[in-house]
Image 1 (tube, one colour):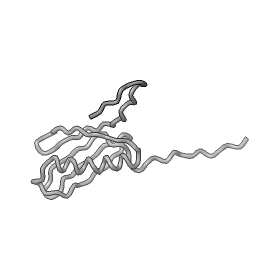
Image 2 (cartoon, rainbow, N blue to C red; image 1 turned 135 degrees about the vertical axis):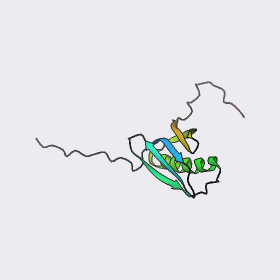
Image 3 (cartoon, helix red, strand yellow; image 1 turned 90 degrees about the horizontal axis):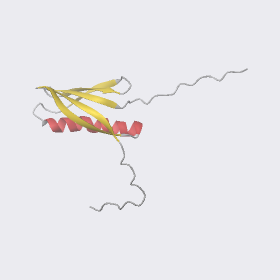
Image 4 (tube, helix red, strand yellow; image 1 turned 180 degrees about the vertical axis):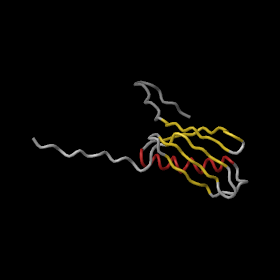
Length: 110
């Protein structure tokens, strides 16, 4: 009896992030992200040290959210908290689509 060759399922080159760790820097803000599959990555945001923290966090999250959408078709959201005075952690969660309204429900106008 002939056996079929086993094919390995190819994983996307980018996993869904779970956590972002952001550090302050001089002319760059280094960050690391940890992904679902125990993978992850790191990078740097080229912004001056006096840039508003929210602007740096948005820049990092926007890139990760775009890649997650492209490779997995999933939407994510982040909640930031402080680790130390010069480091922050972003906890990422998947955003689920709103559940459909039950039959006969009146749609909200607003």
